[in-house]
Image 1 (tube, rainbow, N blue to C red):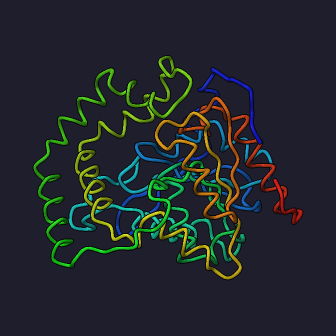
Image 2 (image 1 turned 120 degrees about the horizontal axis):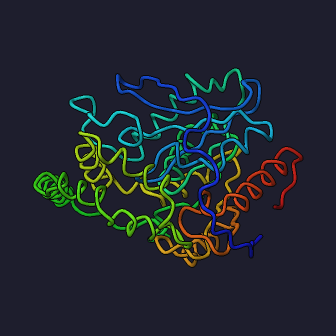
Length: 326
């Protein structure tokens, strides 16, 4: 399915959608939003890098109006969630966030009572979602990854480095990121026009007049511990074992019994993860489904929300009626 609609109005909904709440995970404060009737099937929205639950401003209320209970969670280090990690955790990476969201599904969404969750993730959020699925498939009804990051090495890396070399690499990475002046860099980007340049790389249409979008990204970046959280992410994502990376996770999911269905939604003009990578991924894993939206970049759910919401709702309706195609 492709859309030829070119919608230049990017900011339709309010970033302050739903009800704002807090929850504690490992003594770390987690912010989330929720909307829709409590008795409806649960959808959990997981944002991408640098964003938050606010980034689902053009999607959450639409899904709620179509009969879903919709949650948007701020991953630790992002949005209004905890950034001052202290000694509670050293590094942030997709395995940590997967454990955070899995606990959220059990404690807040309460899947035992309300049924398996539908996970919709943008980029890093999609990686977090498939990480959960690879380890706790019993929690998840379906995943919509829009898009899925880390397909660059489509096949899992077959070789491995000696243990001593991996240790040396990890020590070097930690030293580099501890010495790198992240605090002034974060301040420079968040307080100057560089933020517009950085955001534009994730969009096909111009975002120069989208003040709410800039606020969604800059407000968390201006918090006092933002650079500490970013350092924890940079190190954590850099020193992960290959088994925690996208290609390995997809391979693990492929072999799951009663594997939940996964839909990939890609922006045809995605500059960060080009569409040819998605097509290569589908060739290697034809059990994945791919839908492409024209005139959309990396943040397609926010850029062309009408098209995105329609695709999601059609996928969910087809799951309900046991159809195989979308």
